[in-house]
Image 1 (cartoon, rainbow, N blue to C red):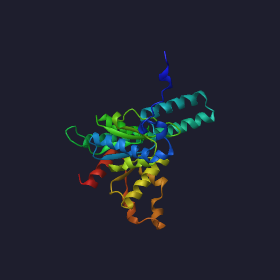
Image 2 (image 1 turned 30 degrees about the horizontal axis):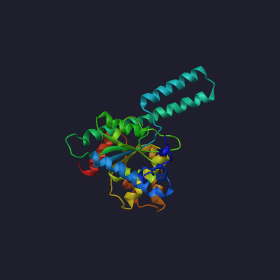
Image 3 (image 1 turned 90 degrees about the horizontal axis):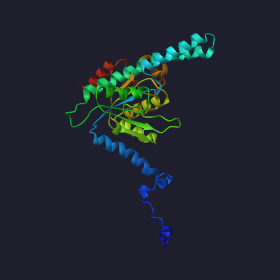
Image 4 (image 1 turned 90 degrees about the vertical axis):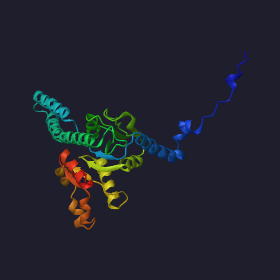
Length: 274
């Protein structure tokens, strides 16, 4: 028997099947296009006409989980009353329990918006919740939509510390991206409302990006809702921007404070005269 087949030349891969090639620097433009195209296509396929973006910390715990953490920390302190690390853990758990209030508000807000704006009888879906896909406030947003039986989307991102998609995202609308720039485009392409809860660098990045785009008329005005006035005013001295002539007084009207889900919905209705 002749083993002629073993000497046959390998069949070359088509360019779009060659993952090693697609990952090279020369293909970065193609990858950027694909990261924009796939979510855009899937959102169109699900008749998502407009979105409401929900930003906030991935570290904010659900109230029941935060209560459990505090109880565990208190139990540990009871066993080790003089240990500094146990005392610190209790203080941290107390803070996380206070912050968990925002998880519930975000969940209630997403549920309210979904109940009011999604209908199975409509050809298009309006104000569909979209988040960054992780835990915390992002999870609360997707979870609130799921509570009402609605759909929600998420654009997750690869990070050095892996961020896994939360279980409440509509599976067909759960996306994993590599490029922050494309992620930003998906957040704002269909956005009609931006809602920001207390968060870290990522939340600040997205907030100021949106404020800048509205301020410079790159995107149409929309309600930019900041939940938790005490947090935002402690963190950012907005009037300093005006006092130093860095922004116009009217620029402070680009956002609005809210405390509850209902206040957020009323702000949206006021803006769009619903």
